[in-house]
Length: 489
Image (cartoon, rainbow, N blue to C red):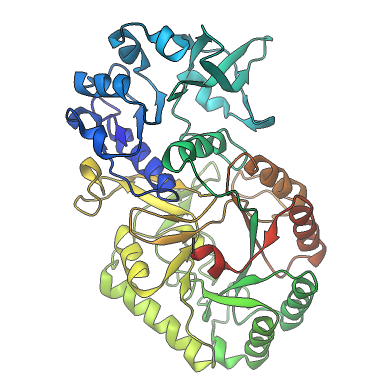
């Protein structure tokens, strides 16, 4: 796997390379590094190649171009510099059956792949799509198209012989129904052509702490058990409202062991197929708004944040005390909270609000068998693909969601969650999200071979929303399984 590294935006290349590498890990071990460092014959030691062209006219080594043209192994090329490959070929159109043409900057706001219409964010339009033309339909096929608002159609993904080409780098401006999903599937065709086609699903009951309603927890367990649906429960072992935000100015601090009715309900959930996972220690940071209230389940725990003047959540930096010992201390206190409540120590961890530092992620990796989240990553952690040898730059962070099990750049097995959750009202410029929206995202994810349909649900919501999602996913032919089953591969 190779990425660009030169020019003003060269730092983006590492980010895209890592994002692709995380996805490839579902199907294969991999090596990732800067394209300019490719040496002749390197491809011979691998089963295939992915190149991510994010810099216009990156100085690609002639050896790379020649090896790609000579190989019969699968190659996936994204974005720029396909023109360097075609210019180097004796007759590119004859070899692959298609020709790269020009950048198309028309308003293409969707991509059609496997008969499913996926979204393409308007912010991606200005980067253009490099169009192709089919010269020999016996050798080349259009895999995905991008219709524009003037009646035209651009070939978004084209395959000729062993070469698959995507006319952009689809890792920016992504969303739950985005063309990123098509890219994931195409990555899989290179990383593991024999990818399994399982149809599995996951549901996680979210933000369960001392303030939970035991009746609601038991009702959820009964319903899911009746539908033969195993589930996970994200437990926060220590509830804090340090400023009395929800208690008329009177501070509240409750270890879960102090609320026996909740502990009893958790054990009941376990008896009905529930797996308890650890969702942080307090799911909040200190006695300050981070960014909302300072209260458990509202705020970040392992990262600092604030609300901007335009009502967006801004990720700032890790806390000043962030360190291996600080993170370990919080985890150890949380595990003690489970033990004091008579609950078995969880083996799966979910970082609050899916955010932590590279240091924290290493701690999670050392103390748990898996994470259950979406990853947050920082530029600089993996210089030339050697992760952990660089210094993370927290002014250049990026998130990534996965549709199936991966082992990410922190070395951690990551159980997927990509469908989101029900939100009844708009917040921080995020629109409401109802069961129909989650099921639409699930439909979009059907384009990915071996995709796991994974969502989470807050127990204080009306249980009918949960019922709609579960029955909808089951009607699509997916079977709910325990998180531990997905963790096995």
